[in-house]
Length: 285
Image 1 (cartoon, rainbow, N blue to C red):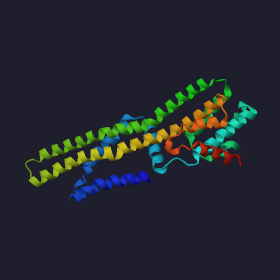
Image 2: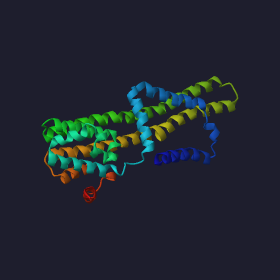
Image 3: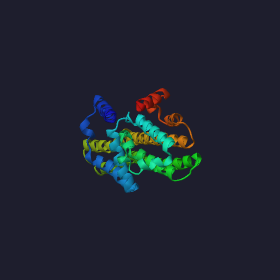
Image 4: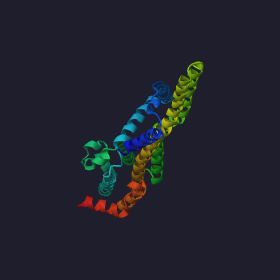
């Protein structure tokens, strides 16, 4: 909802301010200019990006509009899941992981923490790296390096929609100038006509420039920035899980390992150490 409110504020401020300055809103309705600017932007965006990026862009925008903030149950449940796994490893050994990671949606342990199961990227990262940990003898340094490389790759892949929208947004003022130039060509073709028509054609051409600038700074660039922050939020989840698994492999006590993961969380979602202890106490009841 807050994203929709932000969009409405931007639109109402621009067009409302224009109307307050005695501007005629009907003058801004130039379908031909909209087709030129937005059509060129859409075509260039499709031309410049592979199909997986286009599909991922739509998926991330849909998630952006439906998920206003981080699931408040995610980190408490992630800490609870990792604590349970570490305790089972201490009691039964690393092979106990096989009972849970092969089919997490059928695991009695994973099913206890549905908020983690609702995060496919985090769940996949956890399962893959827990499986890797159970298969061979890796040093904490080697394990951390492998996960760092994976997170870097995942971040680059999921940043592609943000980067592609940013590039298209940067080009929009140029598309507005393109529309304006075409409008001036039309104006010059009617230069011997009535003065009022010349003024109309010039105004229509300037609307093209306005459309390009408006779409760039009020639509494409803010959405690209929002997608960027959304990906950073997802990466913080992976960094948290990575820190916990590395600390556990290094022999740290569960509470210390969980605190290492807690420190990787973004500030607005990061619980305090006291809250972390409370999560674990509630789990043990």
